[in-house]
Image (cartoon, rainbow over all chains, first blue to last red; front, side):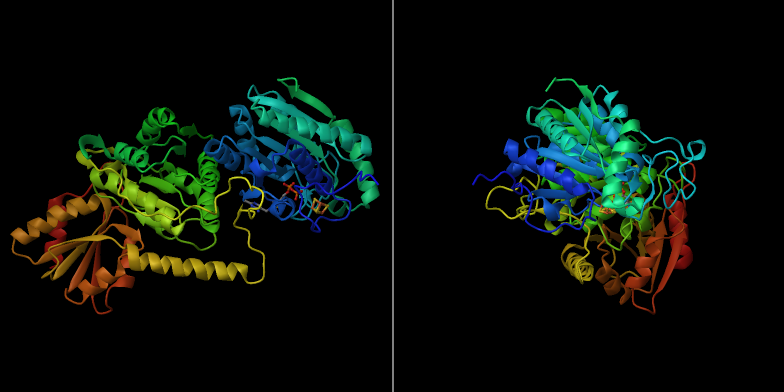
Length: 247
Length: 352
Ligand SMILES: Cc1ncc(C[n+]2csc(CCOP(=O)(O)OP(=O)(O)O)c2C)c(N)n1
Ligand code: SF4
């Protein structure tokens, strides 16, 4: 019998702590598959951020540095400069990357650091209990926007993939979702392209992954999955915003 | 081969870093330390290293964290307002047992303060500075020669103990020029950095550099382990200088730039027939407690002199025998005004 589905080698054989229906698991898997396909596990250093994905090193079978909240791009910069022959990626949530760490991500991108950034946008601070994030949708209720996000007070959700695509230093910037098989297949291709940017030393690469946080959205897994397609994708359009090397 | 040079204190720091094998520097401009990044931005690229002017001190210290985790010798430098921003990263480096050298050329504070010399960051430096309860190695040069020597030592101690090390000087030492002998770096046996991330090859164990400790008792065990390491540091690495203390009735103590003025005042006191000595701590953490305790058994009183309203005095009081008096004379920062030797001699005479 032909095996058609297996755990990627770069992932450990352990149970994750993610909630049922959380898309962090799918994002982890796609990153691991990309690593497997390029055969770069032994050369890769992951930079874990603060948020629900902090336990990256518990799931990926690779060397990992844990960064302070928001600072993963700076930590990755130091590591990459020290070991330019290694593949270095950060894995960050929206609170981490688009709030406390905006300065670090913009400047690492602008320097054209040869790193890959996986940005998981679930429109909320997952780990701390579902507070409003810079990506929270207008009208979305969270534990710190109980009346719904009001753009006149709270501003508008930030489109990071588009924002970074403006910067000359960025090689690749794209947005994907993992809410259905078609989008997952596309996401896999895009994440692979992002890593190819680094293996071919073509500069900074960025992938925003639209993700569900059923727990903090107060939804079933199914409804949360549905919301990604119905509410998030119309505001955060999928696609490649910048691809300078045409990879 | 050693060579004689006439350089600024800040340049001596940068030169020593290069000599110590540091090839990675991350920083952000601030007076009065900008000669350090300027020198290294010139030198490191041609030595195959990297200089990055970071977007902030927060980014700079986290670049240091990343480079250190990858196993290389690296450095950052700043002054008060920037060192405050670096505290986040310093706490994370302490929690991750990462070495790295941080240079603080102190200026006036709090807040934006001013750019004249001050020693008012003593607490921030010697008490860890960031959250969580930890210590870093703190070395206090009082000459351009020591800027050179102690910077090199900072790299070695930091690697040896896996504790961040700080060179704590002020704008007087940073900006003044003196002749120095630039010694090649001393050969020290340093442990291999087998904990550094480099990519997990087949058959190797995974390496994780982290400060999150959620396991049962893991954090407590970490704190006790570091506590023991700090004690070992105190036993092995205390450094200080004594001048004329053998028969001293009054011992003056001061560190860094003001210790030079104090030394002249002590010489004046000797000439006037007063039995006065000087005890200058060189390591501020670990603090040379035993030296204070020993002297406190033979002298009558201490006079602590600082460019602040008194911060090191707490460590002095904690170190000396109980029945010994510790007096204080402070000159918190004012526009360019350092105490004169005559002024300090007067203070010595008053208390003798
Ligand atoms: C300096 C600092 N501020 C706040 C926190 C608390 N904190 C932990 S996780 C988190 C939010 C993470 O949210 P996000 O990046 O969106 O990731 P998610 O948990 O949703 O995956 C916050 C604010 C912290 N650890 N450090
Ligand atoms: S809280 Fe949200 S982001 Fe965190 S694991 Fe649960 S579903 Fe995922």
